Amino acid sequence: MKAFKLLVTKKITGSLLLRAGLKGIDILEKEFIRIQPVVSDTLKKTIASLATSKHTVAFTSKNSVSAVIANENVKGAEWKIYCLDGATREEIRKHWSDERIAGTAQNASGLVTEIKNAAAGEKIIFFCGNLRRDDLPGLLRDDGFDVEEVVVYETILSPETIIDDYDGVAFFSPSAVKSFFSKNILKKGTVCFSVGRTTTAALKEITTERI
Image (cartoon, rainbow, N blue to C red; front, side, top):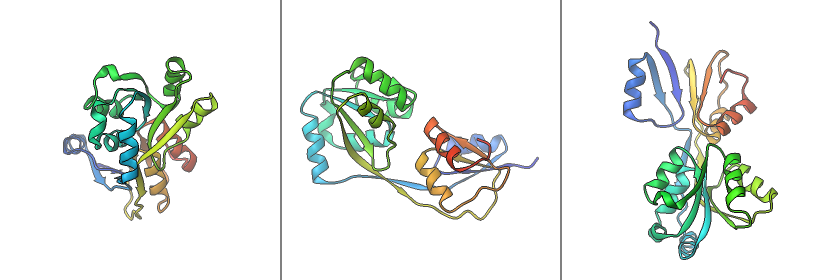
């Protein structure tokens, strides 16, 4: 039986590679984006200052949590945290107690609803990347919230031309979608796999292949 050739646009765990191989899936990993934390005295001072008092903060990415927690001052911060479920929430739970998490949701629009219902009138500190989508801050501002965006990491596109044909391509972020399609066109019949609604939406904007 012919193996299903799958291009994965990020590094995955060895155990996942093994499980895929046992199911007849031949995986090639190629990273199409790089995540780089912002390192600057200005940012350190900003985060240190925020950590000294109570704030309502929002995270929509595991990367933003990792970048913020790299600053030792924040581990005791008395923040009220709103975040996405899944990897983002799990990263937060490594460093803060569950009682600090005021609300979670599956996507940005759901998180906005949580914030509107429980934090009306509060200023929101949104820790994010340089290529963040406008969903959360835009919707909050539309509802009259004061949103301060603090960019704590950069997403750097690293596109590469793919020569071989694949039966499927797996995407994990809108940025990876943008990077991949900046140099590649999918062969007709290639199946796209997507993690998250925003990634799916990005794919629908750029390809008609099956997702």
